[in-house]
Structures are given as structure tokens and as C-alpha cells.
Length: 513
Picture 1 (cartoon, rainbow, N blue to C red):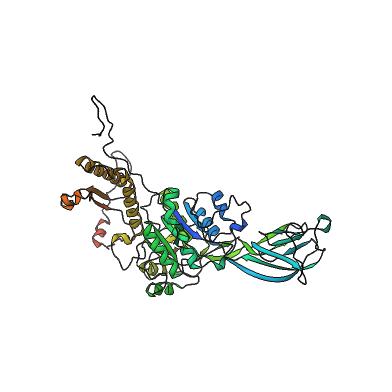
Picture 2: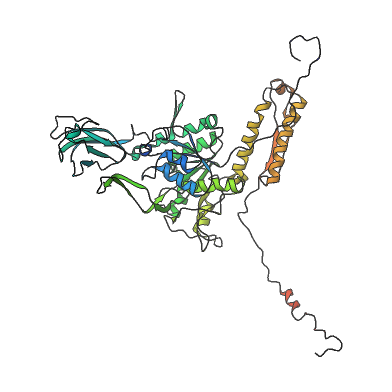
């Protein structure tokens, strides 16, 4: 009862009973890497550094720049979106103020169009002086700078410029260099309340309302330190992570790497999915080593337009997210066709009939690979996490582990409204009713074979309840994938007795046979 005095009658509305449990989002990819934000001409559109940003469309992906070779984020977003569905929480760690290569003062000559091509895109800290040195020219007065394309253009003397047409000058500058991004940048840190790198995924729930559930760092996860950090982060946010193999790795080497300490594949975490091999694709990205000028002086960036190799994880992540949305998180990612790839960067023998095939040997070692046979297209192939074969419990199946994650986090978040209520039988009943209604809905959808929530008095002694603690049991079983289908065929000679047992032809009365 309220503490205030009342000599009369009142009605107090008390919320009671079960509450709906909202299923957490599973088709959300956490992507960390490098983006050419220097190529985004509008600073208000460019994605911020080390800030988890939600990308749900090609328009959102544009904030991380175009496809530029050497930068992982635009390529990964393109691979994800090629699968047709899914969202990504993206963290860009590329900082042009730190990740650059400095070019000392070098002699350049203005061409007939009054331009100098520095030979690199994404330039900064440009200093133009006379040759020999002595006079430092002023940007905007003596020359203009196109930092995106790496062009210095002469301001004619008639417009106030002090550089003669066709003059030779000395130019020093920095150019954006994604190869300078280190593993430590991708892993990030928490310093003074500021989260950088993949650590920024921890604040995604506070800023966006959900955590990423599929973590990738294409181009970096093949490094053991990044792979280990991704696995740790996956545990923190209750996700799974995709770890890549290095390019041009043979199937034998990939399997051997499972036992090499210090290698990214040397893990038995049920939250790690080992992705092998890397994949070829048609790379239409911009080559950032300079542009060409047409007759009108308009810069034309060069496109690679050739086959290249990229980490498999970005395509697997997109396929997983799309399958989650189309069929459900309790479906295995295996046997899902992938768009945008041309094939593995090494030759693989794939067969569902031969246990000695490369793909079967890889799966037996807990490695997810790619399957390609006549008329199948390229498919994700493998049901098990890196926990297999060390662990034989059902949660080494990727779909089982992910289903348990969704159930556990959904129930935890739904319990917020019960926290700090007075403990009573009504409260216990409401919690049980909420959990069991949720579990029943999952059984109806096919996400669970069976399950129930219960309250065991033996697990809740009075001293524990006096401390404000309640313990509930949840018993559930997600459906394992049909990884192996066996037919037992028998040659039954007794079936030969059916020969000659057909009914004789009957001729109707009065008819002519």
C-alpha cells in the first residue's frame, strides 16, 4: 500500500501476468575494417571514425566510400548486399591523419592543362614550393588542390597566381595508405570511456538498440591476434565470428593449421566459424595510385576491372544474414547459394558421395568451405563451428549455438520489466508464463523441437530468495541440421516371386478375344 494517508477509496492499476518476449535481431553483421572516407565528397555524409554505424541499404553504404582497392569495408558491404538482405553495424578504423605515407618534396612540372598529377589519391598536408626551394606557394591563391584525385592545378597569373605556366615546382604531401592499418587498430581499445575498433561493438546496443550477431573483419581476421580478439568480442556480445584463412592456402594446410598454435584456425570456440578458402571475384574497384586527365582536364580514376581474391567471410556473413531473414536463425548456413563469387582461389574437390573429398575432409576438421558441383552454383558448405571435433555437444552446430544465443538474450532483455518487483508467487508465475509462451512460439515456428521453463524450489532456498535472487530452469532443444542422410539398401531375392504373378486377362462373355 502507498505510504500517503487517505480516508476514502481508490483504485490502483497493477500490471500483472505474463509479458511478450521480443526476439532479438540475428541478421545483423558487425563489420570492422578500413574505409576510404576521404573519397566521400560531403563531410556530413562520410561515416565517422570508430563509431558503430548502421548500414541497411546501398545509400547507407555510400557513407563509407566507393570501392577502392586496399579498403575492406566497401568490398565487404558490396558482398553482403549482393546476397539480398541483412543489416550491418560498421566500424571504420582508417584514420587518414595516422594511416598515410609521406612523400618528401619532389619535383613536378605543370602540364599543358595547368595540372600536376601527384600519382596518388586521397592526399593531404600538401606543400608546394618553388624549384629550387625558396618560395612557398599558397593554396587557393597560387594553386588549387583536388585532394580526392591527387591533382594540383595552377591558378593563372591573370587570376592572381604567382606560378608561371609550365613551371617546375617541389611538392611534398601525404597520401592515404590503408596498408598502415595495424591489427591493434582493428582490435581497438577502451580508453577514457572511448571505444575504438571492434570494441565499439559493445556500445552498439546503447546507441542502436541491438548488438551485431555475426562479426567479421575481412582482410584482418586471418591474423591470429585479430581472430582471437574477434572470438573474445563474440563472447562479450553473444555473437559468432567468421575467421578467414590466408590466400592461396591448400586444403591440407588449412586442416594442418587447426593444430598450429598461434594460427587463427587453432581454436575450439563454439563462437568461431572457420572460413576457407579465399574467393575470386571480378574487382571493379578504383586503383588509388593516381588518375588520368582527359582532353578537358577532367580526372578519370582507373578501375581495376580484373579478377582478384578476397576473404570468404564477407560472402558467408551476407548469406547467413539473408537466410536468417528468409527462413530463420535456426537454419544452418550450410548449403546456401552465394552470389558474387567466381570460385575458390585454390582447386577443391567437392562431392556429397565421397568421404575422401576435400570439402568433406575440411568439414570433418570443423572448417566451413565452399561447395561447387555440376549445376549447384557456389554454396556455403559446413554446419560446424571451430568447437568441432573437440566438442561433440549439439552446440558445435552453428545453428544450435545461434538459436541458444537468441533465446538466452531475448529472455534476458524481456526480464527487465520484472527486475526489482516484490518477490511473490504471482511474480514467479508471470515470469514462467512469459518464458513458456515464448518457448511455445519458437516450437510452433520450428526454432525448437521442444522445451519449457520451470521453477524448482530446491534451487531457490529461503536464504537465497531473502537475498533477492530467483533461479529458473530452461530446458530446450533446437533442431540440429540434417548433416548426414543414410539409406540402407537391400537386394531382396524374395521380390522375384512377383514375376509372373500378374492377373490373367479376362474376356467378357460374347466378346471375341
